[in-house]
Image (cartoon, rainbow over all chains, first blue to last red; front, side, top):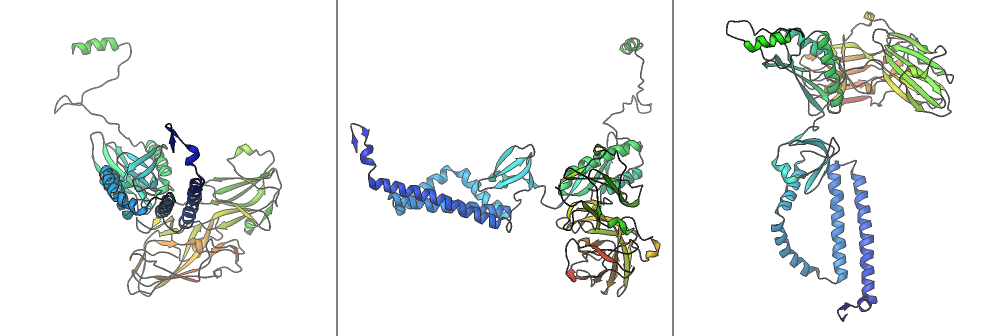
Length: 293
Length: 264
């Protein structure tokens, strides 16, 4: 076949070899198209009846199974013995297994995730600091689209080992709003106003009822937890509307939302440290006085 | 009063207005497109049929919804329909049913206005709620149903209200306690999607009567929808169909807990 170190193309591409190459090409081309069509048809039939996750796994399973059959066929055409190949595959498999422990761990974790179903495609989940919509659940990893349209791939092993929150698992959610009002406020009046606002807001559910808890006396005011239930798709509508309504109503009712502050005392039995606003022209004079003090 | 629900053929390039309770609806047809605007004024509840507005009214004066329509028939009709989700009705004060007792209530449900265009095969352009009801959840927090919330006096006697009402439909509900325990009626889920709207001669709006039979805690309650108009007013005519057609009798697990009366 070789003459003077050069590859003899003329003798290599014999009619018989060309025929085999043509047959392999046809098998790959027709096989891949057929597998693609079958997997797509199955996906279309099952996507409305099964969950998106199951439907996608079924689609991928059919595709990979088809690819395996095509590969076996191609090897057969090439005259490679499948028995010898499987024997070699056992040894290679062990070697690959050692070399790809992480991948195998992800794979097994993926199987656990698929059987456990802590979330499905379309759910909003939080893993660590990442919050996003689940795009796909694969054997090695899941893919998430964050709300700023960034793509995140999280290995399945991480999901098994990390605390995961499925934000949209249940149809309704509770929005916790932490408020602070001044110590002088009538808390009963504050309670009534907040309940009125929740009742008037169309996105707030009247059942389960909104929650009003005085969580404690803080450094700057009385701490309140005001929690409202809502249908999960109304998150933004409720968040924006209720916050604006609380601020507007508190302003109208002259309810003070105190900013963090600290009062200084010069002694146990004395009045608070006196602070007075001075005019511009007397500033220099006061500055000198303060320096002396 | 019944005039308001009749079809009206409008002139192009002209503005029309109708007021139904607190909602005002503006209609306009121009160059193959429909324009509809709505406004809500809770302090001004009147009812006026669709009528032409003075000339010189400008398109820029409202926030319009716009539909591509073509050169079809310029007939429009406003129709009263029930809300698109079940309504959870809460009596202003709890009501108790001793074993074997029964009672008839009248629940006043705020209607939505369906605006249709064309004749004889009208298309729905939009639906406008006359009252924006707050959301409510019926069921437990992990499963259940999104509903609208409404407080009611759970009227036992219709003479307490003046009929016709501006924007409310009267739904007669007959509840019977066939169990051996007392039933505390705190919340009632009215499945308005199964209700038909009838219009009486006087302009009153009614739904078909609903019969609920409570058989005990954790038991299925029988719910029967009457197919005909209630006999409180004469000569009622069906004006809109139920959003979801119903079987004559449906059995649902209506009473989830002792203190809750649920759905039909």
